[in-house]
Length: 151
Image 1 (cartoon, rainbow, N blue to C red):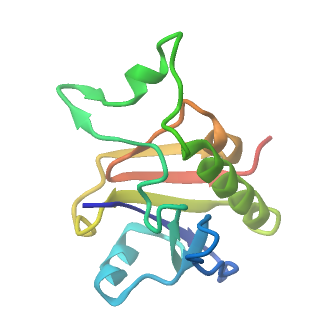
Image 2: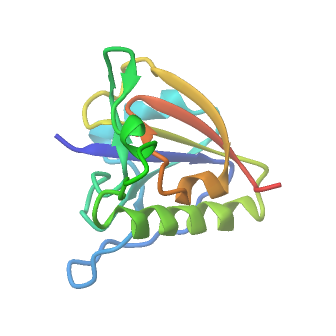
């Protein structure tokens, strides 16, 4: 099962196609079976965002277990090293979001396991775009984020 990340915006964002030859950050409209995820957004344009893994698994993510978001407690350790290969994906995502925020006041992100589109969000956060590139940042499963420009 894969982690999937979606973005809501006021205007249609640029499309970045997936490339088998040069795997990297990409964007696409939601697939038909993912369309129900639109209910998680207040903004009209919804896109699927992917990493160099051809899904969202290349982004760091955490699940809520026994009162803790797994992954985040590891990031607090002094010898923490981000999941191999995840940092370039987060940096590409942050750059993409910053580009959108040059013309929009905010964007929304929602991440979940593929198929959990109708499940209620477990977490709501308001963050600045720079937080997306922080090596200690993890998307929470069924987490909804309002992302604003860096102040």
